[in-house]
Image 1 (tube, helix red, strand yellow):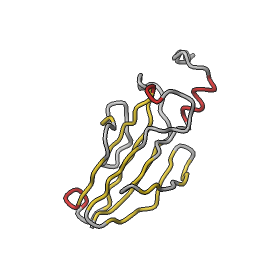
Image 2 (cartoon, one colour):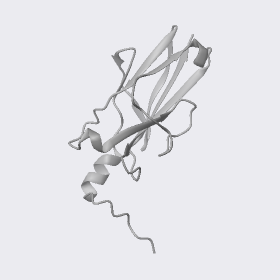
Image 3 (cartoon, rainbow, N blue to C red):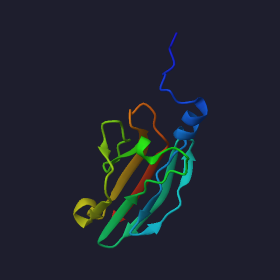
Image 4 (cartoon, rainbow, N blue to C red):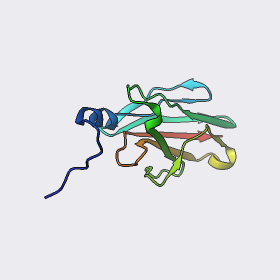
Length: 128
């Protein structure tokens, strides 16, 4: 028998949290993701000249306090975990990182205790 995690959040709040996806812009332009499976939001591969600046916003479309959350991300295609880099400023990618190849950025919203996480955001891009 398993014991449910007691994190002092009502179950409706937990369900809402699990649907969170970070808002984002690339080079100042907002993009719309599409849901590929129930837990992944993705974007078709984009191509940029010289560089791309990815800004993962701190607005999650919820009544929860933004200070309760943190965004963790990877740029190597791995799914973020509680040990991944914490997003604190825009991610800047240039030709030295992409070299014409696809770079996969993945991001997830975690609660500060890293017990719960939201949906996975997957962005693939190429810098020429």
